[in-house]
Length: 369
Image 1 (cartoon, one colour):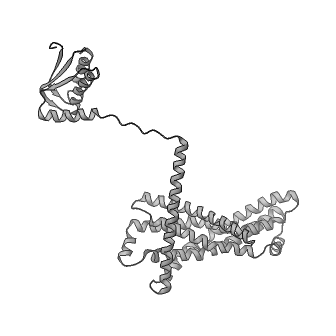
Image 2 (image 1 turned 45 degrees about the vertical axis):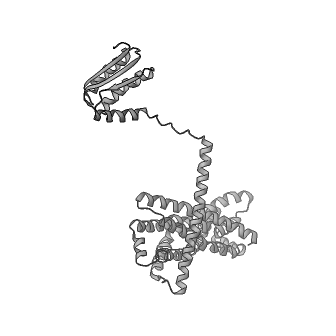
Image 3 (image 1 turned 90 degrees about the vertical axis):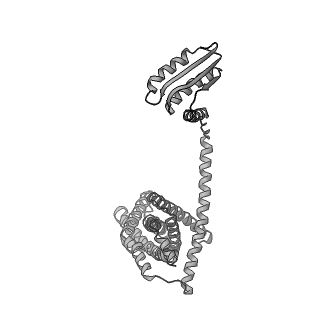
């Protein structure tokens, strides 16, 4: 003590190696330093000062400063002054205040708003991409572009012919389930034979094309996105542009044409399989012979139900193909992006297929067809 001023004479090494020994001494000084009118930190005998040692000294300064006691420094070398200045500045910065968390309702509304904006962007992108496809298709008729028959046949084989077994099996089971549930409820009213109308009309108008479209979206749509996305990652699409080829004409058009041709074919096969499944369940579970099943079907079920289902199939195929290809074009340069876009492709395609089916149902109901 020098009168009312406390002089702290720092000496030796104030580094990470000596911090363990210095720390108790610093704590003792702060505890026993009392309440002088001022404090002088004398660095003149400090041989070396690093970040950890400077932090200990800064702790002395801050402890007395918190009591309202002014602290002065003296004897700082140029290097020590630089280090100590940075330490003082860093420790003087206020801790970041955590952002106030919004209420759960506001967060949910924010999320819904973000999703709506994203959906709007998707619609704009889909319309824009459809315009590119129409322009590419137009180039085929004007002779500017080239129709790639081999690519279309290859895609048609993959999209339609190789999918026949799984589509037939799934729709067969769906038809059987509809028949079983129909017989279960119609039996209470003695109207077992109405299961023929239920299976036939429901399959031909709605279930056949809807089930096939959903399965195509999951099977073929994801494959389209993965294929085009992989080409995007390997910069093969950029290579096509450099060669003067239009990627939409080369990659997208053959896939869309194959899908538009293949989905009605799969829907027709799916309708037959579902009706066969319903007929067999009706025979074994409802004791309705096959000849009676098909005779009633011919008498009661109009052909317009067949055309309604088949009419919707090309539009479903177009939506699935456009969504799959545009999501493939959005893939960035990582495998994670490829997985995200493939998942988005399937989800969006199935959603749009269901929405489109609902719109067609409203349209045909309003037309009385």
